[in-house]
Length: 109
Ligand code: 2BA
Image 1 (cartoon, protein in one colour):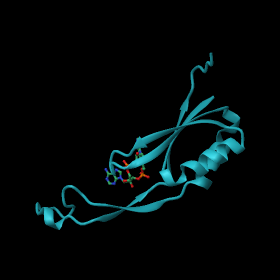
Image 2 (image 1 turned 120 degrees about the horizontal axis):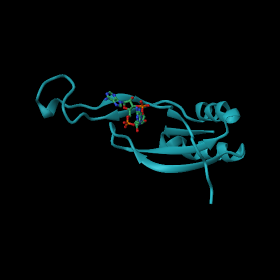
Image 3 (image 1 turned 120 degrees about the vertical axis):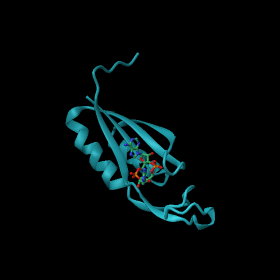
Image 4 (image 1 turned 60 degrees about the vertical axis):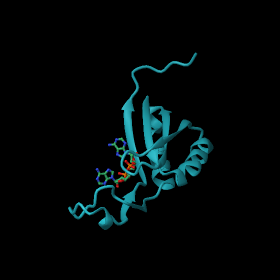
């Protein structure tokens, strides 16, 4: 059994949740915050049997897409120390950041 930890954009969260439920996967959806952009994103915990792992990864790929987000750097990226020269820069986010972890033991009480 594997644990899939998938960080996705909030905009894709409900679509992915619905797709997982429709294919009878069990998942927990957590509200999370990206360390870099410091804005909200969504983290899924999905426990899955090994033989269904690729199916979950396909659902994540299909339902989560990359987007550009603007961020204003705290420190200007051009190396100057002038705060006035800090301007918004586009950052590509997603589709999804996915970790697949072996589960040593799974219990439900
Ligand atoms: P954030 O940390 O808010 O990062 C948002 C996007 O900013 C990233 O998109 C990436 O394009 C850019 N970025 C992040 N750190 C950067 C840096 N040091 N320099 C330049 N650009 C940087 P994604 O890579 O698609 O990541 C989306 C979200 O997935 C991240 O939000 C974070 O919440 C999570 N994530 C990504 N990699 C992770 C990792 N290795 N461990 C844990 N969470 C991760």
